[in-house]
Length: 331
Ligand SMILES: Cc1cc2nc3c(=O)[nH]c(=O)nc-3n(C[C@H](O)[C@H](O)[C@H](O)COP(=O)(O)OP(=O)(O)OC[C@H]3O[C@@H](n4cnc5c(N)ncnc54)[C@H](O)[C@@H]3O)c2cc1C
Image 1 (cartoon, rainbow, N blue to C red):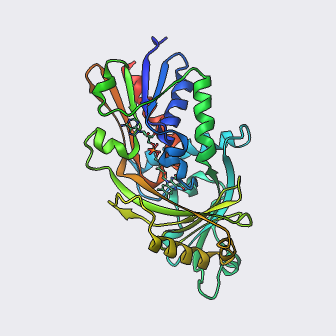
Image 2 (cartoon, rainbow, N blue to C red):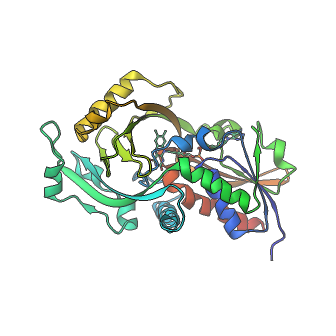
Image 3 (cartoon, rainbow, N blue to C red):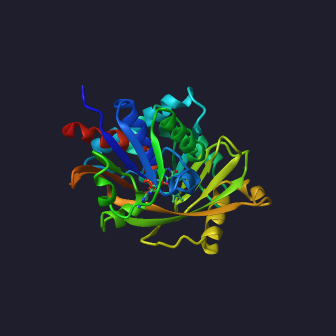
């Protein structure tokens, strides 16, 4: 039996929210408080396309641990699929490329039972005069609509007794005396809070168009992706990656490139441009390795949990589980 502890989670994006859910699952008697200056639609996580699809690099201390995070996250979302209406839906789709290695995802291969190479027939079916599909893979994955998932989870956390405080903190020193443990899930802001020079933005821009007839996701070369929302008939079109850019203004040249690439991939999207579309820019909190480690600051233990780059929605429940495990050695 562990004495109840006072725990703060700084951040209410996908990292903070999953940390809170995991803490309440394992330690229902602990007093838990989420402290954040932005919630739900104001967070970066809200704007993410939300496809469960990791890149193939090493996110954690090893490839095995990265795979464990991915499997844990997938199982978490999969469990919610048919039990709770919270913005989580199954979705199938293709990754195409001119190079075979870009269509292969060793993480998904080990995690998704449906993962396979695209057949010649499928490659032909998705080829057009302007875009011949040479290699491809197919899988059924999950799309997490953070617009629904974050508010649903926040409500669940407060219903289970969690406190929520809207506040910007400028240093962990401000709250160290009030909590036994602090989880740092501040996303890109952790760079300033921890003076972490390894945490850098990767700027992304996406468009959201109405195209209810698109029911599969597609990835292609040049960072081109099309990810439908199963819930509202919109489709996310992307994208770009500008390493080190802090520019949050939408750029017309990015919009033009995204439209050109996505229409080449799925020509029927041209129809969607007859209606209005929204442009959104976000800064991915990138670190070569997600930072999950504990540090003593005054009398509190701060557990860092940030740096998910372009894969926070995919990894969030898995990295949260790993971060919460670090508590054990201090209880
Ligand atoms: C264009 C684009 C598309 C994407 N698509 C996908 C995708 O399909 N799949 C995927 O897995 N990922 C995707 N991502 C990546 C994903 O959005 C991020 O990895 C994820 O949102 C990071 O979550 P987070 O909780 O760390 O940060 P955030 O969502 O930024 O949350 C940070 C939280 O910390 C709080 N905070 C920060 N500083 C302070 C402070 N000083 N005091 C108090 N509170 C503070 C904020 O208020 C906020 O609540 C995409 C990103 C972009 C830009």
